[in-house]
Image (cartoon, rainbow over all chains, first blue to last red; front, top):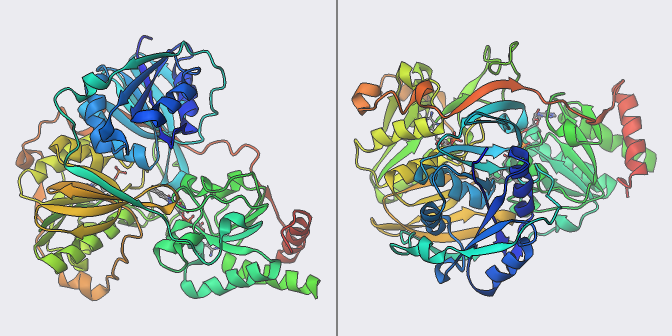
Length: 328
Length: 263
Ligand SMILES: Cc1cc2nc3c(=O)[nH]c(=O)nc-3n(C[C@H](O)[C@H](O)[C@H](O)COP(=O)(O)OP(=O)(O)OC[C@H]3O[C@@H](n4cnc5c(N)ncnc54)[C@H](O)[C@@H]3O)c2cc1C
Ligand SMILES: Nc1ncnc2c1ncn2[C@@H]1O[C@H](COP(=O)(O)O)[C@@H](O)[C@H]1O
């Protein structure tokens, strides 16, 4: 196969994101012999630092360095990428908030196919690639076949591929800036203003050793009492999945996940949480996970250490009682 | 402000356990309860609130079979002024690009200032909004959790980024935004609301009305096709505690104690 594979490198404050080396191993899964070109956009010293870090791992690094990219906005970088990426290429992008902004439109501009949130690549056939993704929050998986005869943009789930460790890159940097800005600086119709940091809550769940985490399975705000009671009884803090915050039942500072807090407890008790990848993305440090869910097929049971199939509305008060009994 | 909201009818995961059908060609669709995609409901609520503040019209549009009419009607009961159903046998099997192509054709028949989609739907793709914007050559922002209308030329939007931080942008109209949950609190739709729009006419536009050719849409135009559905090998998985509730509780408390889960 002679298709060219590109990997879009995310970075922050001069440090390349973990996904950089994950995309490299994703590319190697597509074709073990492929030489992968890293695409990095940014400006100044921060960009150069990122390039120094990834050089040993990639054969080629294409950089776009411009003041308009001191804070990278997808609307600005997308047309630039469309100018430099050869038609027919495969472009891998991390599936997170920036990738979701960038990737679907990039596939239109490159006139290529698009698949989002790939978690595995299984087979490459004649002009086609077979990959694995999930639907319904991970309740079912699918094999998807993508026609790559005109190239493809594929967004890849963070953490789905083990970062590629081998440092076998040739380390060649090509400055693509002038080609990228030829015809003008794009993206003027969306202008970056500022980043507003998340508010700090009353409890810092990133510091908790024991988290009693509640999800949509709690069904009603009034039922939250049983969660607080359990947390109090065992000496843990209450955290939650996103729907609980969306409903304004708990403060945003209690949300665990990619768009919430990254927590590192010793014990994580997931109550009525299905186990979406965005939620699990917030649990680090390999805690002991206990899951209670009424659906025996809930994806959370694949990552938990101990599981109970039960209705939390009944089970949680019983558990609280039991702990109180032995403490008394 | 003329606002169009793209909505999709999807199986309601709060009401159903999703399972693979016997031959793995699809999920088991018998007895599924459907509703409007969660994200789209927030998008419609946002559109209604904007209209109520600055005036204008909210149109909801869905690509789907005749059953999709029920979600169009539901979102009209919520407060959308018009509904359109884009339906044609040829549309079946469209990939994300196909759906965006169909929506674009409808958008070009009207004159909209703002197009809203959900951040993602049941297949977790999160693709239609971004594709649509690129096809229209309009600016786009994804995962929007705040919209402020400055005037009829520009708006400011907040995007949700990692860690719950918010990225603020100013954007020119017309534009396309994909809406993240939590941006508002979607209003409740009661039986009375549904009844009020029960007999409202919902136009159906097919390939002919939209001036589309079959090579870019439907199964024939799809570059991305679902081969099969499966449930992955659970691997190790959790140790499932079984027995009577009392036995389970005893075991669980022991485990909690040993792992430092009780202070
Ligand atoms: C860009 C983006 C970022 C996101 N970021 C985050 C994030 O940071 N954090 C996050 O959590 N989500 C995030 N999400 C949302 C995520 O995709 C899921 O929608 C969410 O995690 C689901 O939460 P849940 O498990 O509580 O609800 P559901 O998926 O609805 O699951 C509820 C579970 O409860 C079970 N249940 C129901 N009733 C009972 C009962 N009585 N007893 C026991 N079990 C019961 C059900 O079987 C089900 O498994 C994000 C989504 C997007 C698109
Ligand atoms: N069949 C459809 N009809 C109307 N809008 C759709 C359809 N499919 C997707 N969308 C819109 O695109 C958004 C993202 O869906 P997806 O790209 O499929 O994850 C949804 O929230 C809808 O706003």
